[in-house]
Structure formats: C-alpha cells, structure tokens
Image: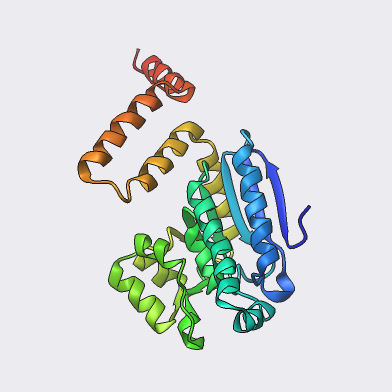
Length: 254
C-alpha cells in the first residue's frame, strides 16, 4: 500500500515513518499522498490513541526533492496551485485529526520537512536536530506553513524565521516555543517512546475534545469561545472515560 512511508499501528500508537533515507526523506507528491492515506487510516481506527511521525535514517525530512523543485519551475500557475493545495489539505487533515500527532525530529527538518513537523501537535527533538524554513534563499515562500507557524511562535519570531531562512538548533527552537521537548541524542529514542506511551495512556476522549476545542477557538470571539467551552465541558462529562475517572477519584477519597 505504501512505497515511501512505513505505517504500523501497535499498542495504541500509529507509527508513520518517512522512508526515503537515501534522499533524506525528501517530499514529493507521492509521499504527501501516502501521508494523507496514513493519517486517514489512523483517524478511522478506534484503537489509535497517538500518532508518531518520524523519519528513517539520519534526518527527519530535508524538504522537497530536486525533481519536485524542477517541476515547480516548469508548471503553470494552476498546476502549482493544485500542488500547493495538496500540501495545505495535508496540514488541515493533521489539524483536524482526532488524535495528537507527535513529530520526533532527529537530524534536519528543513523547508517542507520543517513545515510537516510544525503541523504536528507536539514536536520532540534530539539535541542535534536542526530546524528551518530556508525557502527565501531560492526566492520561494513557506506559504502554507505560515498559518501554523504564526500560531506556534510570536509574530516577530515567525517573520524573522521566514525572512532570514536561518537554521535553528533544537535549543533555539525550544526557546522560541516551536519545539516542546529536547532530549540528548543518546537517550532520544527511549525518551520518545516514554513520552508517547504516557500520552497514549491518557483519556483518548478528553484529548480529542481538548484538541478540537483549542484549535476551533482560533476565529472565535471571547464570548463564543466560552460558549464552546461550555458545550465541550458538558459533552466531556458524559464520556465513559470521565465517568470512570470520577468514580476512581471518589474511591480514593473514601
């Protein structure tokens, strides 16, 4: 089913691996389509509790491959819009996914690769990892990812990143708020597995409702956001996870 990614669902974790290590997991239309298929599969499987996105080999993802860049230069405006729309659809699919999506980044996450990492809900990084949006260096714009980047870091930090094309260390990305956790290279695989297992053990319904509410608040007024909170609060109280959690908590108190 997949040629350029690996997909496995085990112990509640859907593991998606960009699998072009010989090309530093560079992106093309086929790998974007396969990512969409894998995210769809994990979203439709009730046994999935967390999605973990990684890259095979030494890098997470280096961005678009050379063939895709060459094609971009030769395409018509309409062709390029269709190609860009496909990536935008992938980002939207990730944001609307009912489960948390974690990017585990080692090596380089650059250009489109950094965009895919940024589109994840949580980024875990090895201390030697590098991040950046170097599109400006070839006269290009990291256009779709700006919608996510602007929501991840401050406006001025986002502008500096896309205007300079600077490559960030994991530590600097953490300082800006782009990365959530940084682990030593030596302990990175173990720490990632531990983090993912802890998140998978949380209430799936509570995390799903939290993700939906948080992201849907973007266009809302303060009053509308509070009303949305009221509705999610009421829904959460009716879930099996909440009922069991309250019952367990009350037993501890008696």
